[in-house]
Image (cartoon, rainbow, N blue to C red; front, top):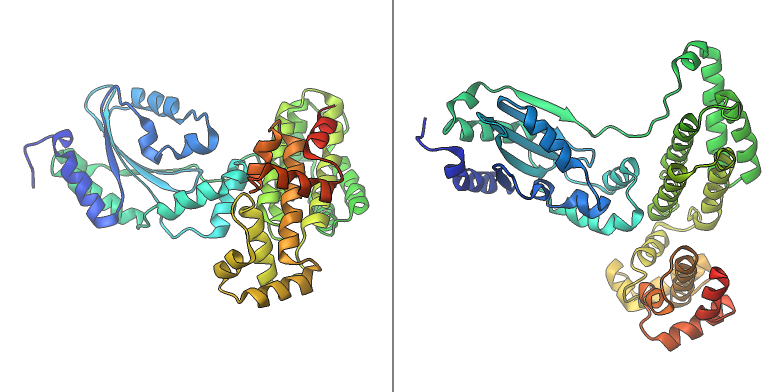
Amino acid sequence: MQIEMGVKEAFSFIRQMLSDAYGMDAHFFDYPYGDFDKIDRGFRRTVWKKDSSQSVLLQGLEMLEGYHMVVVKSNLDFYNILAFLGKKKPCEFVSVGPFRDRPVTGQDLIHVLSINHIPAGHLTVIRQFYDSLPVADVQNVVTMLRHLLSAFVPEYKDVATEYVDFSEEQNVFQPDSETVRSFSGEMAEKYASVLNGFLDSMLAGDNQGAADTLKQLLDYTGYEANPSMKQMKKYLNFLNDNCCSRMLMTQVHASFILEQQFRFETQIENAGQYELLLRLPYEIARKYCLLVKNYSMAEYSYLVQNVINYVTLHISEQLTLSVIAGYFRKNAAYLSGRFHKETGDGLVEYIQKERMRTAVRYFNMTNLSVAEVAGKVGIHDFGYFSRLFKKHVGCTPSQYKKMVNA
């Protein structure tokens, strides 16, 4: 059926049909386009602060002619469908989405943070965003959109769908071609064995074993044989990402792992001295080993692991025995006794210690004031925060902050 009306005039109808059928949003863009953040609800800008996708899309629009329908799978693991109406330049286009082709899982969220190097502090925002995305079969949405558009633009009946996938992992180490040619099957097998030995030592928290196997690993890659700084940074990202990926299979909470991965990624990117790059592999190994020693929960039951994770993720909120017991639908006395039996600490005592450990990390890593740090760890009584800090750390928050900044 052909309707004598343009897509722009009919867009409210098209948008309503997509909303009724799939619960997803759509936007019409006409030059000078306006706010491209609508395409992903401003999500990229939220997690990355500065995002270059607008300029990239503008460049692409300048080159387009004719009609195109493109399904884009983002490196953030959701879909948009872009239908370009290219009779003129710059062309009009319709964006449908974002949406997913399957419900989101916890592992999906960790994967998105990991491959995009998003700080772990964004985990709550990311979870809320992905939980809000509609789920639909991609081909069904494409078919419906094509039918809707072809009612107003008959050429769309014959438009082939193009697929673009940006969801592959980033920052994989790529050795130079000469290295690849000289790397025999036997050497590759030995390299894999040494790499797995290093990762096994790291997961055991064995710093000496990790350092020894790392030295063999670096010898195989020629890392210390005067490579370029660019090549060294590629290998460091490869090492950091491998450590992070393997650590995500352990009982250490993902927020700690991803925070550490992001910290090293930033350090690698900003490193300007050759000597620093030579030391960094051993620092990466040491810090991941420490993470295993300090935060492994393999000896705890599933319930206690979940309680510890809950305290970590909600440290700035109200944390009482009754609140946590209610969340896990457990009797407060039972939960308290179980927690004490496995950890040696009462739950209230553990929460206090964790608030103070978190406060120390804030003082070590930020320039926040004492009052701001107190708020960040969920304590809004400044006097109580100071007394608690002195009890657990041995000095007042102000004294500790002076020592750190000295």
